[in-house]
Image 1 (cartoon, rainbow, N blue to C red):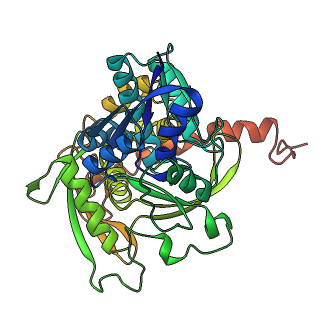
Image 2: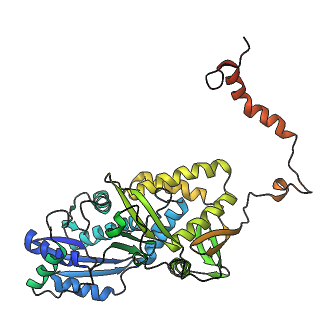
Image 3: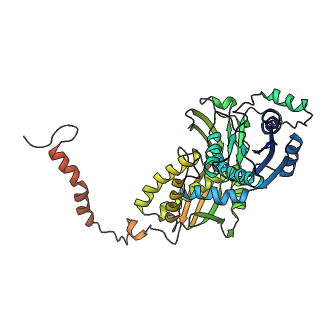
Length: 406
């Protein structure tokens, strides 16, 4: 009896070929799992496509709400941006998919799981490492990496020869992955880091020649680091992200163009669209500036970098990431308030912020009448702060030259 394998099925050409290839070349009973994180408009059709390709069972799931609440929100609270720019959209989606693959495999008694990653990118690491962490007994195969070597034309012919309906979109010059938190675009002309990304690479965001003439203002409300609504309106996480993606995209907000250090050891030119994530990170950071004590704010930037690194490298299920979550949640106790964001010609800028827990005190900060800051205390403070430098200068000198009199 063939072993059962659960294939993460996107509905595209590669995974459709993989269904039949795994059955014919590896003698598996193939079951597919399709997860909607915001890029699958018709789950039922995708499930039917998997069955026509030869799957014994096709399961489809809408996990958009869980994705935002349990993956995007923790990363937002952490301030996690890989290399200070990328909001980790694809990287955050992979552990959720891996968890559901494992759970479906155990339910069906499968001994293998499969995914459509290539042998050159980060996703293979994220899937393989996540499955190993959740279910060490399961084995993993990635057909595109592990033997299913075909060109696009060969894949189409492969399905046609087997009488499998081929629904192939026009060949795109780009490789695209998308979910609610962002859209990644690579390959084609984008592989030249000196070339400006052409407008046809973008789908969610308007070029500056098409954005509205008048800026737009948004008031985003947070409770303990989590965005909960706009203005007077409380919104579900899903509705809030959808709305910000739409309005942010209209103003051209969220385009990211970077040379990325992939975990597999190569540099890659990456282009992203992430309107909602960009707006929310800007707003969240502004609110933290208002309510976090200086030492906490300084350390929080280090935590953000480490959190982003772990997620990017596929270590979502590491205890280290869970420990960081505990610190992050503690740091967010007072990150409650409202941030006013101005969207204007591709930018999202802070136009104001307020919080009942604000550490900003006008009477201490003002240079006008009513100043309560003790100016005389500054003299002793400066003397103590400068004491180590004065001592070093006397004993060791500055720039290798002693200041001690001969």
